[in-house]
Image (cartoon, rainbow over all chains, first blue to last red; front, side, top):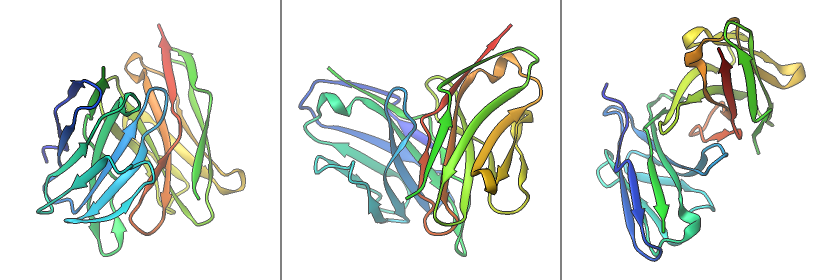
Length: 116
Length: 114
């Protein structure tokens, strides 16, 4: 168990640029979640995958955001035409669902995005 | 909709003193409840979870929490604070079924004074 890995840890970019983050979940985990955390707040749910299927998206996930998990393993989160308000920590988590029971989510260390 | 409210965004305790972090939840269905800890520039680590078994839940690092349905509370305690406990703590709630979408509170920063 190597834990949930996120890359990069930090990203600084200019407003209007596109950015992409990667998340590698714990290998046997079939569920993968993305959260956004702003300063002084708890993480807010963005979206989640069951294997390769994206099953729910929060209304926080505007049209500029897209997430994929093409082979049911790693996932990417892309933000197009970044805005100042996108500055946040983006957290990935994974869990194992078996027979209708969900194990708790394990979190990565996040990608901190700063928009100049 | 489910939600949690954490009372007190900052809590200070002396080293060796009791730690009490408060959390109240709102849920229309039997909830799962969690406490997570976050150290600076890191992700969240699960401290403990309540999933409708025993109401007193023991977690890692000497923490425990008690589920009180009548008070809709799930407060986190530790008998004796250690310097290494200084961190931010998040209470969270999810459905007891489904895909376990987790809703987090706004967090409580714990300061431990030597």
